[in-house]
Length: 109
Image (cartoon, rainbow, N blue to C red; front, side, top):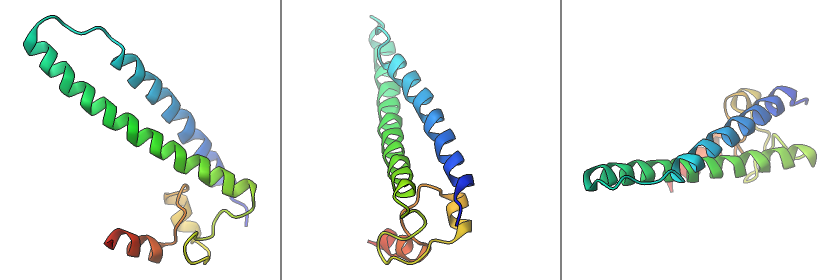
């Protein structure tokens, strides 16, 4: 089974995330205001940016893992049960490592 579509989607998303994380990093490096009220708002903004950065890094890790599975010929198979992951699921979540059933079970835990 060719996964060309999914590979392109993963590479494009990886590029988007790289740009987004660079923007977050630049925003976090900006000097702070000397006004206490503005500093409080800036700190809240930074917390949001930091969470977005952490989520972005986690997504990058999942994408790199998917690309590695592609290179090893293991992409498209559930890491939990070994069953083939449906093409429709891979189109929606190309970085997924679990089939629909195993993902549902994992989300219950």
